[in-house]
Image (tube, rainbow, N blue to C red; front, side, top):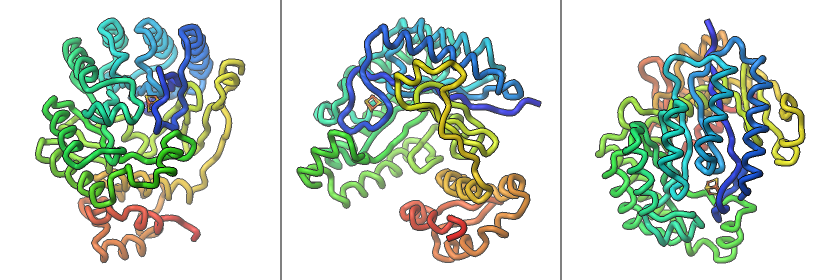
Length: 380
Ligand code: SF4
């Protein structure tokens, strides 16, 4: 039987760089995008020989802004994938999109290529907040794109939201939550803004101090309201920052959290199969110039301790927690033999709970997850 494989494809282009963004993305012209798609298809083709014993169960086109590609460019990528890789019967295939780049022509090509899930980066329903983030779109443009996705027939849509934005108030965040839940997307990702070094925001807010950002109490209230309101609207929290209507959890992301095998194609994309990890080169000129099968770098074989730590760190992000049976199966020893004392300590403090053969964080444990997870490091 073939093993399951998730495929990530990175499209490193955006119309304009958002002020808070530290992802591997930059503006590029049509010719550059087309040359990149050619190189990407070459890489996908050249790597296929390593994945003969696998079957693709999920594909995720992320970025950057994958929806900057024309429908035909995206169709070319999927044609190469389907020609060279075996697919499972019902793979989950997601494309990330930015409002302002969504057209009917593209959506029809996506649907024809087998895309069955779209993920739209909205971030906020407040146009002033969007402008402050340097986003290219308004709430109205998001709405038009969202409705177009529905009209074309997409029945699995994620909307990305962010809280703790500069100038955001509790009331404006609540309004964003209300407007978005009224649309009934199947999935909502809700993250807090993190100001990363090297971004324009870092300079802006380091200078202004933290005064322009919501204070800790407001940020906390936003976090609590996300849980409460989404829960009341029927969304189940299945990972610290991810909520879904029943049956619409993102299978691709669950593979990351459960340490399944995945391969990344495109600039800087990361891969992991069988405890071995690597990533592609991060310089666009290197990526374009290196031969098709030689874009990989930074190989690393994880020790067993590394793998056990990752299993706990990633698995505890999910509300279902870490399955004791899966842990013993993967590492040939019971979870308690490795982490018994740590689990006992945090269960006694009410930060972890153990039920139905799994260990998971409690609500209180999620709030102090960094403290709990630090104890799962081995050899300290
Ligand atoms: S659209 Fe996304 S990837 Fe592109 S600059 Fe903005 S945050 Fe970064």
